[in-house]
Amino acid sequence: MSLKVGFCSVLGEEMLEKLKSKNISKIAEFICKDPEDIAQLTGIQYKDIVCIRNVILAKYSSITVNGSEFYNSVVQSTTILTTGIKRLDNVLDGGLYTGEVTEMAGDVAAGKTQVLFSVCAATAKQANQTVVYIDTGAVFSASRVLQMIPNNSSIKEDILSRIHVYDAFTIHDVFGVLDSIEGSIQAASDPFYSKLKLVIVDNIASVVYPFLGGSSFSESQGLLSLLGQKLKSLAVEYSVAVMITNNVVKGDQGTRTASLGRLWSHIPHVRMIVTHTDQYGGSTRNVTVVKNSRGGCSVCGELNIGDNGPIT
Image 1: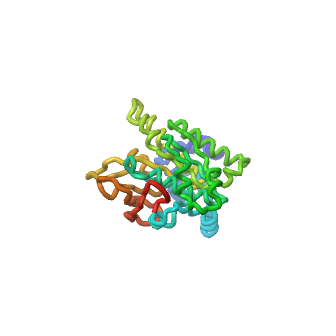
Image 2: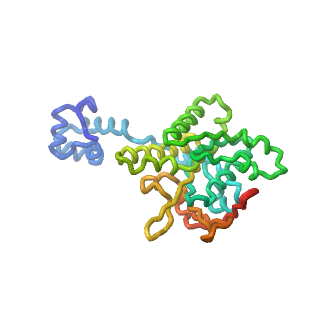
Image 3: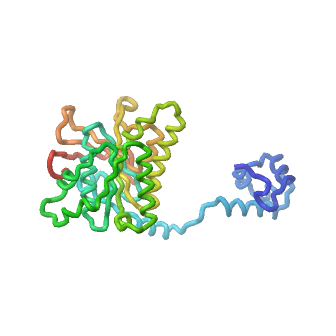
């Protein structure tokens, strides 16, 4: 950003020209130099240099935060949600963290949605926790979610009331649901949203693929970036965990990697790849953490996804 006349009461046209003559035309260039050096270089009075500097710092500097207070606020606002699958919790350092976006990528029929059903059930089992499930493929199954709950559970009948399902078949539908969630949280009139701890988007790729590779590359990339930032903002500002599923593609040297390219790769805080243990399918999957902003990667665990009952 460039220095301009009127930026500060003492910064006039003559002073600006003196600064420019010494190659100091941008705010960054001005703030990086010592005020005494600028005064000697330009002949501008030291007190005027300090005045301009103070205005810049007041307008653009970040507010300082006490480290101990910041740590305590993070601890108080962070909740670790169990996935309902012990092996997966171990891979994820305890489960899903509020304030983060967790992505699970895999081939079609790799079991991603089944894991989401387990996460839904495990979160909704808690009386003070609710879930929003954004369904882009009309795959949500209430009966399958209930299968994830032990038959002797006394709260089984209340589980579905703690899960709101929204159909969203285009990226604009997804934006609409996310805006609605944010508005409901801010309004604080619905107790469901005051207890919201988890937002799920299944499957993110299905609403993104249709507009990728179109005639306007910049527009499609802008929409993708905006969607990612919207999910991260929702997670951080309202202390909810966001979990999304994605497809996989072949990356460098034939390795399996999450789709949507490098721009999207910066969105998830945690990314997992789910694969079948053998080429003929079966009920066992491998889960590998390939990105984790909090801990180690390449941690593998096996999941057994059967036709009925909880995932083990």
